[in-house]
Every structure is written in structure tokens, then in C-alpha cells.
Amino acid sequence: MNKDEFRQWGYRFVDWVADYFENVGQYPVRPAIQPGDIKKRLPEEAPIQGEPMEAVFADFQEIIVPGMTHWQHPSWFAYFSANNSPPSVLAELLTAGMGAQCMIWETSPAAAELEEVVLEWLRKLLGLPEGLSGVIQDTASTASLVAMLTAREQVTGFEANRRGLKEPLLVYVSEEAHSSVEKGAKIAGFGRENVRMIPTDAAFAMIPEELERALVSDKDRGLQPACVVATLGTTSSSAIDPLKPIGRICRRHKVWLHVDAAYAGNAAILPEKRWIFDGAEFVDSLVFNPHKWMLTNFDCSAYYVKDEGALIRTFEIHPEYLKTGVDAVVKNYRDWGIQLGRRFRALKLWFVLRSYGVEGIQAMIREHIRLAQLFKEWVEAHGSFEVMAPVPLSLVCFRLNDGRPEEELDRINRELLTRLNQTGRLLLTQTILKGKYVIRMAIDSHTTDEQHVRNAWDLIRETGAALLSKAQV
View 1 (cartoon, rainbow, N blue to C red):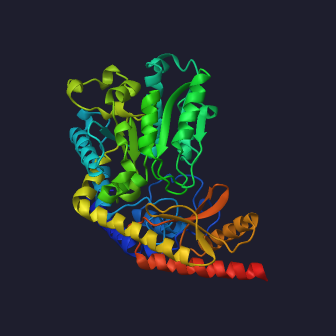
View 2 (cartoon, one colour):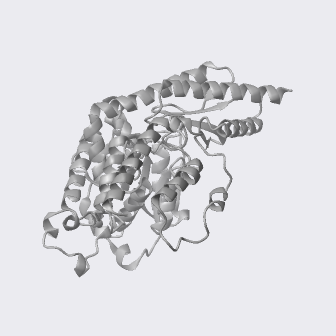
View 3 (tube, helix red, strand yellow):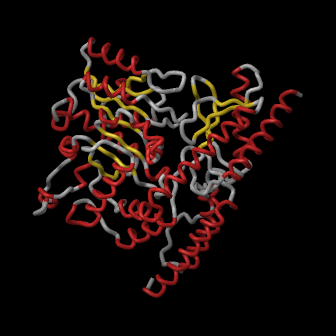
């Protein structure tokens, strides 16, 4: 492709993306296809000769787009969002165009220094304590693994890096913690059997007294606690673990405290929601995802650590071919995590913060929280539905309940979710809370407004009524 062709197709692709932003709500949220349907339409071998871009783009529109689940759809209420925005997309275009590899300062000086500045902006915006140093990881899953590896080295005096683990180390998490924490414990060498699941209270938050009881019991048996992971905004219900009492316990027992605030951390950009970080002075590491609720394309996780020396010592390797003359005075982010090669993720975050400003992002998050409270009120006022968890942010957990036995309620709510998602008009997901099947309504897409939430509630009510009517026949 020559320069003129590139320019022509570049304009055309930008036009397509702009149209997609405008019309994404016209697609089914999830495609009505079966496993293997896309593969059947693709050749089994790569083409020997190059094909014209016209043919490639046609197949993109005719095969790929109809087979996509549309995360930017205004009726996307599943999981948590993975928001993007026009400024973020444009920044990604520039990043891709430069093709920079940002592993050390010398390979991309502006990328390294912009990352340092933008992470400090975010720390201040969220009201996090001074003394926390930031770096962009790809995902919260990776960040939690990084935290556990650093905790492992701290408790072993950095001997695990040299000789491996000589004795079991323990990790403590809420029973509602994200599965990535358990996965990270496997990879970090703790082992799944050494992950302690701490009970939760009626609001699905970790019970500090149960954490301390587990720590004391394990230490009395000669076992070695290494890390506690507190969750601010659990995936199932957005429960907020009480950070301050957990932090005091960790300080007493000299255990690394990592905070997973992947979704909820974004809300702390609102002064009225900064309470979720009450106790952050006890934190050793913390992660939240601007790619969830801050208009920034996936992937972009902001990871903060109190002792950057411990982080660097855990991951640094110094082959001759990576040494430079400025290593002593710059931040080489290759030593701040698992990856050597790094994308220029800070650029899109910078574009978003400058384009929307703090007030623009705050307005979006406040509106999502307002819509969640509105949806909660509708559920509470309806005689056949019930709210199943507190709603501190923009996730509402609910279910259909007309008083029948629990086993039947689980079955009918599973059918309700299936029927709703099969319409293609919205997408919801499910979880289990204290043994009960629950439907999740996550209102955090930047394209969602009140009418989309009202339309969703109308469809939920109508489908629920039809199911109950059928069940009573």
C-alpha cells in the first residue's frame, strides 16, 4: 500500500469509526450466532498473493462486525464496561502510527515521562496518599499478580527470586474477590490451597475480624502470611471491603496489603465517593482501571505502589544490551512489571483527561450513579422483583421473586436472563450471592442515557411478567 492509498483508506476507516459511534445502538448487543459460524466463513489457508483492501474491508463489514458483541452499545449492562471515546481512539491511532516500543526511557523518552506525569495526575484526582508511585499495567489481573510477586519477595527477603519458595506462603482474600486473584496466586507460586477465603458480611464485604482470626490461626500453626487483597467494588455486587480496619490489621501483622479497585476506583474522582479509599495510607499497592469507567480504550490499568524499590527489585534484570547511560536518573518501566516490551498507553489517557477535563468525567460517572439509583427504586417498588445487594455505585443486583421456593427462583431467573439476552436489545450477566442466583445490571457505558435504562426496565418487567404467568398455568 502506497502513501496515497494509505491516506485514502485512513480517511475511510475514520469515517467508519465515526459512523459506528453514532449508530452502534442499532446493532444487536450480542450477535445471534453459534460457535464456529465465523470460522466457517473464513479460508483455511492464508492468501499467497496480497488482496486489495477493498476486499479485506468488505469482509470486515460482512463477516467480522456482525459477529461482534458490541461493548460500546448504549444497552450494554453486562460485566463492567470497557469504555472508549473519540479522543482515546484518536490517540490509539497515533500510537499505532508511531509504532513505538516503550520498554525503557531511552527507547521512548516522551512516553516514559508522560506516563509518570499522567499517573501522578490520577493519584491526585483520586485523593490517594502522597508517596505512591504509579505505572500503567495492561490489566488489573496483571497488576494483582505483580503485587503478589512483590509481596512474596518482601516476606522472603528476596530469596524466592533466587531460589524459589522454600515454604508455603499464604494469601488472604474476600470470598467475593475476583477470580484473577486466585489465578495470580497460582502463577506466583503460592498455590490455590494457600489462598484463604475470608467470609463476608450482609453487604458482601470482607469481615475484618475474620481476617485477623485467620492470620492469627495460621501464624500460630507456624505458617507464613504474605499478602492480603482487599477489593473495592467486587465484580459480583460492587461491595466495598472496609479498607481502614483491614489496613490496620495488615500493619499489625506486617503483611503486604494490595487493593483491587479495578471498577470502583474510578468513582473516587468524585469527592463524594472518596470514602471508598478511607484507609489508603495503609496500602502497599493498589490498582484501578481507567479502561473501565474513564473513557479510555482497553487496555489501561493504573497501578500504584508505596515502595517502588521493592517493586523494581522484584522484576529488574540487567542484560548488557538494555543498559543505558541514564538508567540512574530515569524510570525504566520495564522493571516495574512482567512485560519487557510496553505499549504507549499513557498517550490515550492524556488525550482523555485533557479533552474531557475532570468535570466532564465526573459528570458522566455521577449520571451513571444516578441512573443506578433510579433503576434500584423501580425494582424496589415492583412487587415481583427485589434488590439483592447494596448499590454504592452503578451496579444493581436484582432478581425476580414472587415468593416461590429458592430452587425454583434460581431456575426462573436463569430463564429470565436467557430470554432477555436472546432479544439482542440488551445484555446482562449473572452472579451468585450467598448461594442465590442474581442478575447484574451494570450502568456504566458512556453511550447510555436514561431512556436506555427505562427501555431495559420495561423489557425486564414484561419478560418477567410473562414468565410468571407461564409458570402459574
